[in-house]
Length: 76
Image 1 (cartoon, rainbow, N blue to C red):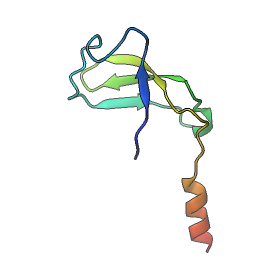
Image 2: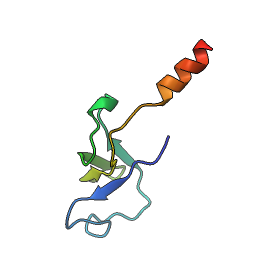
Image 3: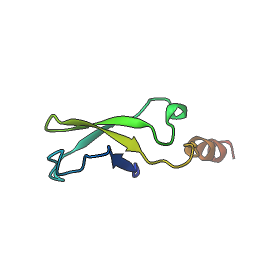
Image 4: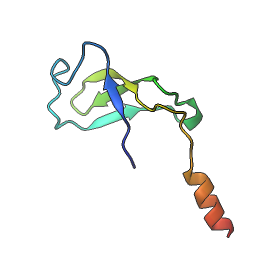
């Protein structure tokens, strides 16, 4: 688990999207981590049926460290 930094699209914010902060969100990220790119637009869906586009604010390429760390621990 972690934090995924997102930005609303120009002209949109929580008020214009009528978000209360009580929603649960589903963030539609690519299954293959190598497909996640800085500045990529992705879809966000709420538990009350709203959908909107956001921009990922990963400012560098995403690197998967956990598999390497786990692999090293298992092999040691």
